[in-house]
Image: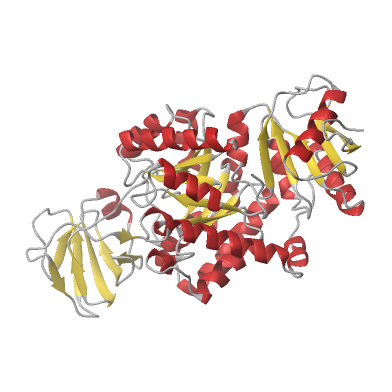
Length: 478
């Protein structure tokens, strides 16, 4: 099944979309990768969802990516005597280590790492920013704050710390248990929450030992300030705009989104734009014009994927949300302004053989108006480098490794096909031409360009380009 767009769609599974029939409908509507939210999924449900996804994969004959999203630390205040209290701007309010029920002067904060790290002048945002406090004094056991805005606080509301770097791991004990369970299944990507610094990825790397690819969710100001370092140690990034919009001024989020997308494009790492993309479709069959524009902006900017959260997980119109997102992307990519916008941010190639070959493949394919670029990739690196070029033509990524094809299903423009490895150069050309014809990217007499490494089956040796005609029988190349 050939997609008529290059940007990918990541759909979250949930109560509205967990059975096998619905998963297939979502795939047919346009979902390329599926997200399992470990904040809500038990290990048993996660395993069952993976099984159902792999069953659908067999039925449709296309590699499907699976992303498990770890919950990360959840920072919350304690409880109040009456469930909630009213506050007044300008008053003093204290967070402390006393587990007694709170009142309108104080509340328990069951996180000693926060009590120790917050300094005077740091902001504390409660309940997604509905209550804003500023620390005036802290001694490691109490944080005396001044109420800046908001008038109510209630039990177990979340705490955000835009100015404070916490000396805690991004992995909680629950995350470690979830990661161990995920690593036993056919999961391709793991998303990490609460990333503050590149060191936060080290523990997950050590545990996973390359069995899954790591996607870092950029949702904290501390991560934005060390973006390039985090990109270097990640396999992909996600612009988690919901949390970013809590911890940073809302008006800065669009600019940060562009900054992250462009940094990932320079590095050749996939980037996903997430949160509230078609939020109104949780309850409505059509999105707002603003939401359509939001999705279109991410596509114009060159993001690898756009994500649906509650829209596909718990909404009343999961299939419609996916198909709407697909139609928006297709229309943007047909827009006459799209090529100029997408190419304006094209990064310069690095001084490597893979980048040089990928650049040449794009230039030759566009100059000669070829039907497709076909790349052989065992590890996925060649596919990533070709996608970094953002060519106007389709890219077919052929891999003998099913896990590689599944991971690459998140990457812009890559149509992934699992195939046996070529036995020699002639077989490689024949196989590429046949698959291009079979997958509806070319007809007999059309030309494609093929990139590969010689000698064959040598990782990291991409060093060859070959232009070939699809034979009259559609089975061989010339």
